[in-house]
Structure formats: structure tokens, C-alpha cells
Image: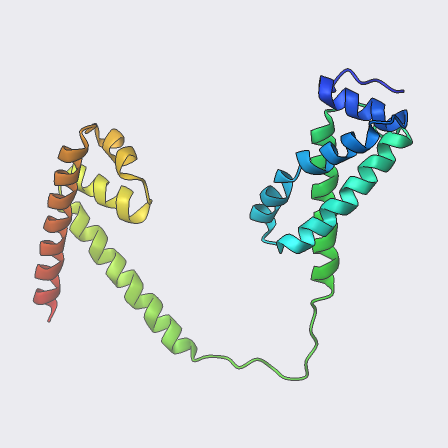
Length: 196
């Protein structure tokens, strides 16, 4: 048996039982199958693949790990969980690559092109609106400007914004935020009314 200095005690027992074809090996194989099922959900959240596909890849990974343990390909130079995850992850990546290559669709038709002038007009309107927002924010006090940008643009949570502006009392922060948004709405409405 190769070096196993990186294995935890329970992993070492599992590897030893499977390699020695111990009478307890079925118990350890069940542990191997059950212990790493959380990897399915982790990889699913990273890749968006269907859970049934990942379960099939997981089963293939279990069979490959058992083979690697039996033929000493797995030498215990890393933890078994790390080894398992890497193989599972790379098998998933291989699946994605194979299926991405098969998705090429050939057609004799050209896709319809939309009216680009409409897109350009919308883009120009959005830029003008953004410039107006920046101009209005410049007229506001520093805490209000920071609160609105952190909340509406950057997406910080209320407690994070409170910390950033130095207001840890949630009630005071809430009042301040409400007042800032109210001021901004009044400035916005006034500016829009002046433009009409």
C-alpha cells in the first residue's frame, strides 16, 4: 500500500477495508457512496446541470474511486474527499464539454435583425437618465449620496451600508435612508417637471 499520511482515520479504514477485500468492505462502500453526496448539490449550483445527470456522474465517480483504491492508483497523497471531488468535478466538466460540442445547429437561414436605431435610441435615453441621476446625487449630502449608491447601485445590505456610513443603530439608519430617498424623489420630480 502506498503512502497514506494525508488520510483521516476513517478514510484510512475505508481504503484498507476495500483494498484488503475485508468482510466489512460493503459497509465502507456504503459510506463512500453516502458521505460525498453533498458534492452533487455543490457542483449543481456551480454548473446548473440537472441533478439526475449529476447523480449518474456521481455513480461513475464512485465506481472509478473504488477501482483506483483497489489497484493502488489512489496512493493516499491527498485526502480521499479531495480526490473524490476532483474526479467528480472533472467528469462533470468533461460531460459539459461533450454536450456543448453537440449543440451546434446549422441553418440556411439568417437570423432576423432588429431595428438598431431603436436600440441606439434606448441606449442614448439610458445615458441621459443616468447623467441626470448623477447630477441629482451631486446636489445631495455625502451620506445620502453614499446610501443611495450603496443601496440602489451596488446592492449592499442595510447593515453593511450602516457600517460604511458609521450608523450602527438600525432605526436611525432606516430613518436616514427614508429621508435620503424622499429628498431624491423630490429632486427627481422637480427636474422632470422642469423638463416638460
